[in-house]
Image (tube, rainbow, N blue to C red; front, side, top):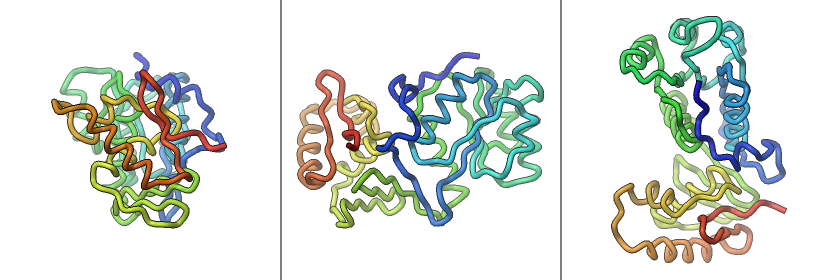
Length: 246
């Protein structure tokens, strides 16, 4: 099976670093199970999910997935070595209301439709990027855990994705909608370099034809509002990132 195009920097960083992101809710971090028989892909996904604040773990077979403790979301590869992933999806749905995102290298529409008919909440087709995985997980958890606030914590910074409120050192910071979207893009995976085009695609849209200097204006205002406790670094020729905590 083809490997997902997970950012190599994310894949190479340890999940338990001092600058890791904590995503919390009243019930604690959402638990995500990765069901993937390729150890390289599984390791990358678990690392990326862990850095995003989820309690992530992995198993390599359908049998192990069916025996695993309860989770809030499951990333389920359809091409498993022991049990067909669609059957695993059906059996999980028959016994729980866990959010299921099926992951497949199969391009046929019929496979995706079959998985969705058997209870999957969403579908990812390989290759994919980590940002897309995180966005899909957030989306299914918003549907299945609507009462749980979703917080991004990084040092003194707290970003509430549900209420769109930001605090720095316990002080609420008023941001414009665009400033919030830019900060969310950076705070989803702090330390990772986010390109200008990626920020434009997420904070504006993929077909933005205005002056690119508008991003620099928003970033300058955002840096001023966040103050000295939160640092947005410019990585020349590549993009921007939240600085690693010391």
